[in-house]
Length: 80
Image 1 (spheres, one colour):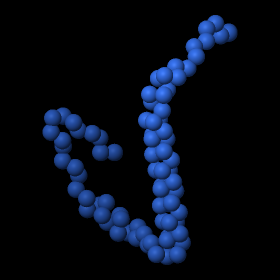
Image 2 (spheres, rainbow, N blue to C red):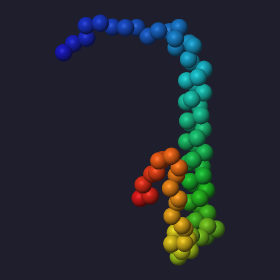
Image 3 (cartoon, helix red, strand yellow):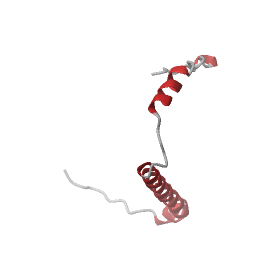
Image 4 (spheres, helix red, strand yellow):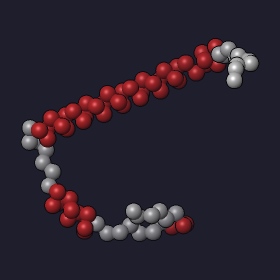
């Protein structure tokens, strides 16, 4: 197998989309940094005892939650 034809990059098209690509990459990076920050703060607060999770309360809430009503127009999704 071998390469028979090579197409060079279209620099004019790249220049058109450059700012959009830069903004997309910047947004993804900001989201990642923020997510990492939130996870670190949450882990630190759990370790320090500032966040307490009561599993029995969560279980009670799940039991008491009513089943979702069917959506109109046949857009019913499986519940589990």
